[in-house]
Amino acid sequence: MKNNRRNFIKTTAIAGIGLGLVGNVYSENSKIDLSKGGRIGIIGLDTSHVVAFTQGINESPDRPEYKGYKVVAAYPTKGSADMSSSIDRLAGFTDKLRNMGVEIVNSIDDLLKKVDVVLLESVDGRRHLKEVLPVLKSGKRMFIDKPVSNNLAGAIAIYEASKKYNAPVFSCSSTRFAPATLKIVNGKESVGKILSANTFCPAGKAIEHLDMAFYGIHGIESLFTFMGSGCKEVVRFSTSKNDTVVGTWNDDRIGIFNGIPKGGKGGFGGTVFGDSGNEEKIKILAGYDPLLVEIIKYFRTGIVPVSPEQTIEIFAFMKAADESKLKGGKPISLESVLQKAKKDISQLI
Image (cartoon, rainbow, N blue to C red):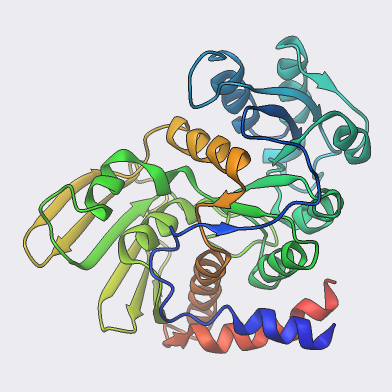
């Protein structure tokens, strides 16, 4: 087991894994053919995403991208008493799904008996590892809503478990698939090779989470969609009014994330600088539909659209940002926080 863990961590090396958009195919323990559809189950009903996702899928049964798929059951979980964004919304969203015809069940085990694929939607990333394991053991394909975990070690542990049980899983923010972003990444806008990018969004925090994991991850996910993998070092400039994280990539490109200052006007956006043009005022958030399309495509094929390596690198970026803040803006390498996380995951598994 120790050798397997060591080999898995080794795969999180941050060089040469590109945009993470080349799919990885996992074989599945279940022999169910999901190419024509499947029953979707939800774990965690303490986020507005569960209503939006269920409406998006169930109310468009004839749409080709969703055809054959339907949310049929959900397990609310108990929520997190120390997180108001969880416990205060749990009952309301549970009632909404029940009124939409979704069966509410009493446990994850009960849910797994009734569904073919799973959306893990619990808003509290601290709970994800525990909630993930029974789904992985069942072999069912699963999407984990952001954040995949509350910290770097937890994210690594989840992907290690995914490999151990040979069960596919992916996680990302909906910003990754915003149409305006993909036009640039896929070369349909005339920016050429991306030399630098700057993204921004609100950066509200949650208890016992990396500072940027709960909400800032939306802008950071977008930053990595533009820049690709290969960030080697992070510096964070943090004051009572501003929070800026600057990453340096292996090829000396620079990517910047700005958390919107408290009291500032909200929004999600970015700017990209290329060798043949620049693109400003990019809308990096365009609703949930582009993400849902990718989730259902993944359910059908088992091909993950975002690599574990890039998601782990995003968490290393956020962990390094926290370390830089603690050390007064000192540059922190992603390799150093990954090495530390290697020691921490043994306490989680």
